[in-house]
Image 1 (cartoon, rainbow, N blue to C red):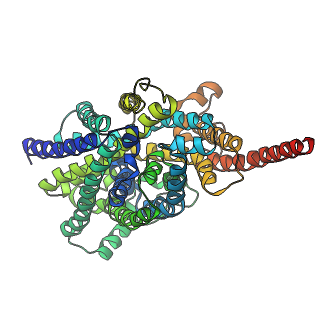
Image 2 (cartoon, helix red, strand yellow):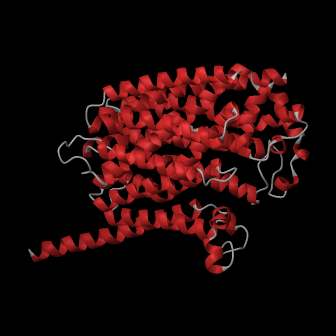
Image 3 (cartoon, rainbow, N blue to C red):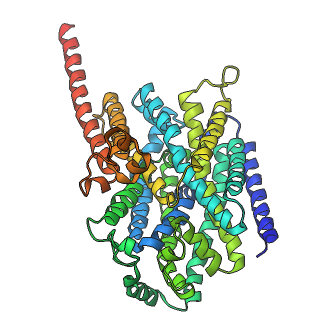
Length: 527
């Protein structure tokens, strides 16, 4: 397909997004509309937006590349995403989140916990973590979209990144959350249809059925590259050797990091506060589950099976056809799919990237303008959104700069890293706000600090995947990690940060609650 045709398709797509963004802009009258859509968002739109925000280019390009390289063990993440990210999130977290958010008139995730615990410090801390940490996640999503544009248009990666960033920035800054939701819904439909066709077409071009394809993939296990075999790779239909480096990466980093971390994603949590009633949340469960099974399940499945295609056409498995796992899926689509589908799938990647990025930029902007600096630009107009818009712009610029520093094969890892940090830092305080009346603001704040610092310490000094590239441990102590005894340096930071954060919130809350009780008894006896 010619570049001109691709360009025309993209231009039409952008005009549709611009129109949806304009609709959001026209319906945004005040700060509540800009941040929460007036709490009157249609449940179908909310569910589609939730799913589209959940699934980014990192899931399709990054994790699809992981599936192509290491196999179908990553499907456990799909199951956990569906169970934790939709069923548990909507039923056990969403209902109470919506109720508490309405009681406190909270408009953001930091505000939700800050008002619940009656602590401005908690609100500021969470907003700071979001504004500082989320750009890494946004950067890997930006890279996923830019890499695909680079492959399809054969243009420079830097130019692809610039164009992509400007497009997303335009409708997020102007349209607010309604513009984000409307575009998300369209993008979710595009992703769903593309993944269905991808699954159908793969079996068609390979001329084999489901069982036959999986058997053939099992049979080529001896073709696992030696460098991966040494890490514990046993074939594309088998889990890695238990306790091997690849097993720790797959289970502790990717599956647990993303599978549990999705419960504490600020950009997802805020969507629970956008609907009018609990019944509307219930309607979103089925939509979310089906969406994740088709989108995530398909790309992980086809990603692993792409080895059969590359073996047939190139004579080598996927990871040997191209060394950078982030580029395996774009290359596969370019070679295996019809020309017209390449253009449509590019829209799928753009949709996945844009839906997640728009939510991330909106969340970071809200953390800056609504939580950290709520009075910015509101001296004359209390409903002004100028502070949030400034925050969105700053977050876009920071994410854009970080994207230039990312190495090859970083997309999946960067996603898991941020989600793991969110789980360790936010999840205990968030869960206790919903379900434990005995929690205190001191316990919540201590938990936030411990979760964040423990995760940071583990990244800098314990987990080799991050500690070695960062180099701080090497500079201070002359070695890549403090504990260079296997498997300590292979264990993901989430397994250090989350347990410590949970223990902290329980112990500190019990201690401070006892002090409050004793103090109140003392007051009563004196009086």
